[in-house]
Image (cartoon, rainbow, N blue to C red; front, side, top):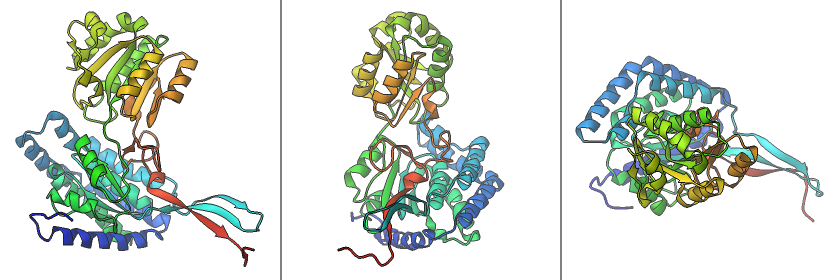
Length: 424
């Protein structure tokens, strides 16, 4: 453990870890209907206490603006009535989802006479370290709860009041349903040293999930002593193919960038086949200009769009999380996939095309956790995928990949049925 200014920090966190471990032992045997009851109560209370949540959030937003946080960060922090309604809807959606815990698959008889299969089980205690978005408190808690886990939540200091209010709702809902309150624990300090303490608590934490900027994820990946589920950043692409439908291309490319700027599934680079550039880039530039999006382009882009700035090499690998877009004109599908392979972050990439073969190649060959045809990258989201909510997006290739919902918060173990069988 590292030394901190708060001499009692490590001891307090370990007590929270012990409480979470004890809660996890109860959660593993919690009936589905009881877990669902806790989620329904939490959803009702989120709606009933919307005014209190908005008041707590307003104080966080004011403090963030006074501290000079940029517009994208403030947007991620801000709760609105529709976002609170979506938070409650996410809780109810998770309650409606099938419970993966206890599911048995692959049961088969072996020549010895034993029956072998696999059972899906909770992971145990999951710690989530996240920044800005207070809705993560509800999303993470709901998914961990439904999957039979306990969770330790460490939100960003900028959302401290909002996170406290939401966590209190979740804990009271657990208690009302007869489940342990400590199945949801919010780290009780904004001290940044708490992060390093958590990274060393592998005796209590089974999985750690960082949700935040690249710096946070790199820090966690470098120092964590337990498994980490992560993605570093979202450099997402839309490629407009030679055989793209113009109306679809315009709709997807505009939505993928402008629907919301501060999210990891927002398009950061637009690739356009050279055969369509002269036709599509001017109207796209006009639309982006109406949304206040700054364009940075390759030489061929700048020739077609005089208002575009010259892109640098760094632009192709930058996650802006802001109204800035890089645009490159490419020779075709091969060039587009080569660009994505070099600069992409394996998060989400999309192609707009009416060519079935090109679509199939893009789906098969592009190495990303979500690959799309004729759809905005903004759909790369647990709620949109039917997961109810997501605890994060994984660009790793083991355990879970893409938006992580209930199944990603469980594991499988082998189970064996016998009838007094012994091995000869």
